[in-house]
Length: 516
Image (cartoon, rainbow, N blue to C red):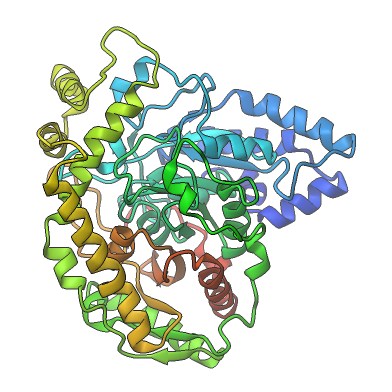
């Protein structure tokens, strides 16, 4: 199958930097870019292969493009991403006519009254929000037997590389949309794998920031301990440029999101500055082989080859470098205990910010009841066991919750990632993000094996997934994890490895129906 929208392929796969050059030259306008990308979505998202990466387009994007073009003509440029289009995951509030649903029909009844803080920062920087991307409903916090990328409002998102394969989740459309050339940038959210997983499966770059680097105000929550907002792009440099905007570097903490007050005072203003092609030289890279390899022999082989490339580029490979608590983290129920408590408190606080409407839920129990009342649409493929369990969770003063959170942080931070880095005298850890994409299955749910990013998720530490090759046309990602606030180092290492591998052009989707 060829590209379903060949007339827009050139602009759909232009880098942010090439697009910016053309805008500066006057060879193209932001309006022309936005119109071309909207046309591409129309041909490939609902029609054609039916990717379903986009839940709703943003009509205000046309007006924003016109305004930004006028500002450019007048010599007023807001920043390096002035006039660049992006997708925003549909659990992040936008005040436009497209609304914000988190994939749920329950939230389709009203629209947010204002933009999330990260969206405010995007618009202030001149980024054009052109569409809301589909996602795993409620950020995949609904039932253990779910199908990633499915939502009642958006349907099933597909992987553009091989259409019967999963796009991963929960930032499914954010990953698939960038891979498909719908926009060069997208915004995702992560609690445990929701940026890294779709980045890996769709052959793009995802950065999960340290919890507290980006604001969560106006984002439908799962876990205040683990939620973070981050960029997805086709290259490390583009993701780094976008991260600076999302973080609002120089803008200070968000007073409505207290966790951002933990941010260092000297945050970088420009994460692009760390994109050094010699960034691997002398960097010690730990390989946690025991727990984070072995999910896929094919993925392991590609990551092994990438590590050899890193070695030739000057990295010191420390192998093995074990995370001693990895098994305890994966086998414990503490992460779920924390998430259930934080979900109930966070979602009910969020729901109070939405306008009132008949049938609009205000509690998790009312969400559960709404789904039962609309079972034909909401419960057609899988249930809501996690939501039911959240109804029974106690408050945030509950000792069960507080003790589980403390154990989580101790296992994942000082006894986990920090100890692994110190024991190996390493700067970063590297391992397969996960195996290749699995077949979409609405009967049995997701069938993927384990992934390696859980410790970083529980710790609230940063991670990057970047493509290192394909298996039968399916992308494979390598994950880099560091200590808190180590985004500059991770970007430096990821950029240098990406340049050494030189795979960016090889990661465009083939739009195949299935693995042949």
